Image (cartoon, rainbow, N blue to C red; front, side, top):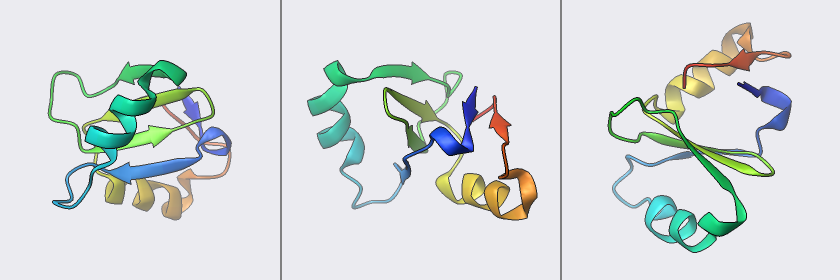
Amino acid sequence: MVKNSDIIAVFNLRHSQSLIYSDYVKEYADRYKIVDAAGGEEYASLILTADTMYLSSISSLTLKKRAETGLAGGAVYTNF
C-alpha cells in the first residue's frame, strides 16, 4: 500500500524514449526496495517513494486520473 503523500514521482515506462527503467532502476536498485506490483504483466509505470520503487502494470496516465478524480487526498492504492 502506498499513500499519495509518500509518492515522490510516477514514471511512464511505456514511452518509447523512457530510459527510466533501463538507466535509473538498474543503476540505483541497490538503494531502494523494489516491489513488483505488475502481477506478471508488462511494466507500465514506476512509482517512486523515499525507499521503494513500485513497478506497476497500470499506466502513469491512469494513476494521474485517479489522483485527479478525488482519490488523491489521503488515498492508499493497493492495486497499481
